Length: 236
Image (cartoon, rainbow, N blue to C red; front, top):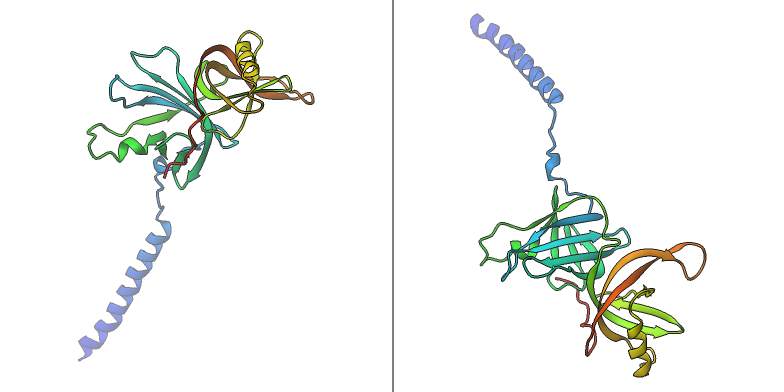
């Protein structure tokens, strides 16, 4: 009986030591955070190659801007020398970037850039997900083909790119005056005239005040089109 009574305090003392050691170990444990999974900041320039059904790939650059607008250049490899441009608005839903005006254009923010959600969710595709890597720079002063509604009123030339609600003033120092002639001859009176032009975004003097405004500078008029821009839609 004496032996049993002595063993009880010994066991209680050993239990306390074990508990204290465990508490001390927990207090000193450092939780490591995997920073590689943190998505990049969405504003910036992203570039890479997206899949193409009948060409080696589509060289793609997307410039997500802080004012919730985007500029995209897409060049079909082995086919085009001038990128197709589009300008629209973008929004962020969780880690998914949605491009309004570009059907099905959804991208997932990753630690490296933008991963195409459209291609990733195609069960028939055996290719790995296409990703646009984040870099530096902008798409200012870069030529592109762009389609939109041209309006000539009060000696002012504007273009509303298809897929966008905003109108851009046009810089037409060296090209584009034929659009004004077509517009006047047809007496369109404020109705947009659908055209495809070669142009670039750049900064120029504001029509009001001393600040600068963003312009689309016309380099060449490619063609006049029938109809109007399709209605801009947001990807689901």
